[in-house]
Image (cartoon, rainbow, N blue to C red; front, side, top):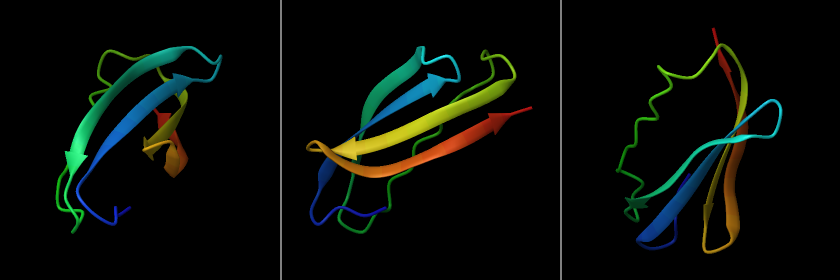
Length: 67
């Protein structure tokens, strides 16, 4: 995932029932060198949906399986 210039990326983590579990923002530079660790230690086992966006544009959408 890369932005064309420095951007602010927002994320949403949603569980299988559609409940918003976590959301937030982080900065990413033009080279995509920033990192963000999503802590899921306190979340129950299951399927989650992660969505990353910037300026209303979807950058990434995918599933996370927590065992």
